[in-house]
Amino acid sequence: MASSLDFDDFFRCEFARLVAFLVKMNFDRATSEDSASEAMLAARGKWATLRYPRAWVRKAAYGNAVESIERSREGIRRALSGGWLNTSNDHSVDDTLAAVVEQPQVEYLLAKLPERQRLVFAWHLDGFTNVEIAEALEMTSATVRSTLRHARDRLKKEFEGAAGPESAEGGAA
Image (cartoon, rainbow, N blue to C red):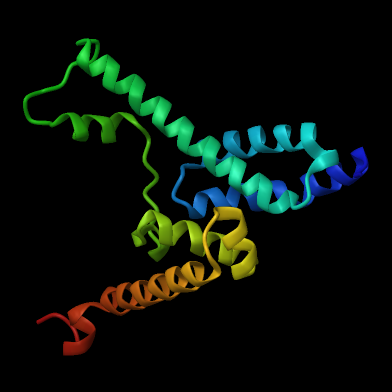
């Protein structure tokens, strides 16, 4: 169906966008690049049979990134429970996990969305239609529209809250 050259063009056009998609999903850069690479490699192997490669690689890369984070967390949990990592009494296991597992400190509003809203909104920002998003994420179009509406409402509230009370009062006293 598709030639090798078509895949090369696809890779050149989509790889950076795929990494950016994962970063929008709040994954760190290294996890995003690794997960995108794995997805592209898998897409290359299935290239002749892929109908919607842009959607397929996003879904695969997202799954790869989630699995990567879970593997890291599980390894840390095992190390903690086995006594291989020292934790002071000041910190909980969750605090230690957060300190050990690299968490991106994204300072933009998308990071404040719940995961499902962030996922749907990232697909939307990547130019997919509601129907395409619904099909790729196995949702109804109505659910996608509703999720996007809730995400926009939340982003609007976060954005308005980011101005802070000082702006309403003319600055701090």
